[in-house]
Length: 192
Image 1: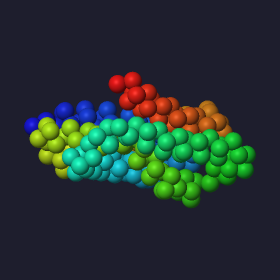
Image 2: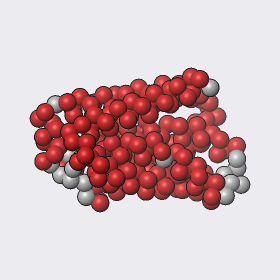
Image 3: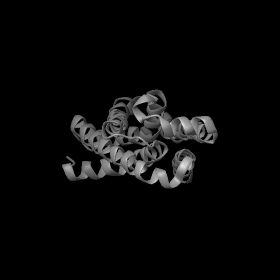
Image 4: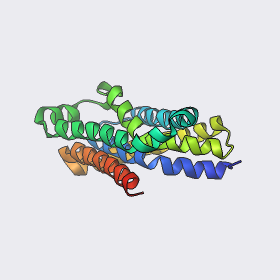
């Protein structure tokens, strides 16, 4: 059975995409409070915890389909969300409204959830592996989700700190980061 350190390392590696996406979200928002950042972290952590369980449960039924299409699904979701962030940042009115409004007044949990799903699709494949490793699935999901929540919360807070240096281009940078994550996932799977 895999130990806590192994599962923690797995959680840290799976949280890298969530960190990058949260960094972009924090950079695009000037008035991020700790609780707002924690809510974003919790959404990323929740999806990162759920997808290994879903992968574990569905892996036996749709293993070939997941392996063949997961990278395309992640790429398309990240491209849609990233494209929306870039388009919204290029709109002068939206950029001015984002600077003036606190983050709590404008969280879009639908878009945040899509981003969290897209960045956690790789964890579904990990769920299949967890079943083969005889790991306690619930402990693994709690560790992976908890680490991702902490890392994503830190990403939002750090993004807020670098956001003023990026100005209104922070949303563009965040959107491009999501494109890059999606492209990286796609290239990794296609070249494997």
